[in-house]
Image 1 (tube, each protein chain N blue to C red):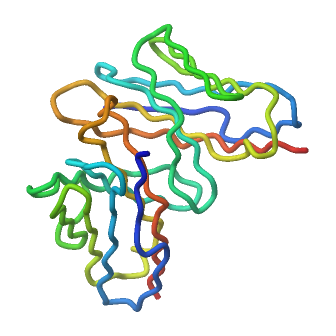
Image 2: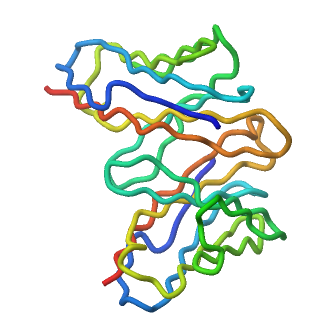
Length: 118
Length: 112
């Protein structure tokens, strides 16, 4: 149980284009999803908290207009990197909380999406 | 501000050589302390949640313990498949904020 998927697993795009990453909870409903980025040999840095049906809450220093987050249903959140540049190249990981789980504070992570901007 | 410090940064063990990883934390009221395992190029895999000082949890060769200032992940008789980065994270009490603050992790390598 508590499986989270991400699509795509890796993407290469040209500078200036936009890229959409999907995060799905497969066997549970998630009112809250989180988006992280991770640079090589670094820990996970929270970018934003995504709540179903409401606007995402972004961490300090994260550009809202660059990283668009939509949480349209209880099982799907999307992250769109707009006008991507090489410095946006990173490993993006989502996580989700099980709305109906016994341990609602636990976050279950997806497998990650490797983004390379050329 | 919540902070998590993990040590050592890297640890090499012979197969069967038991050891411990440390996670020191400061948080404004602990809701939970979490241990995750992360393999290269993959997302973190949930291992344990600890809620209060004195609590212990076990899973196969892993045992996690918690005090008011730190947590230990004990690895007994490790195998090569235990090689991974182990991440510690804390979550502060308060409202509907379920954010995690992560440490930088400990890279464990178990040599056959």
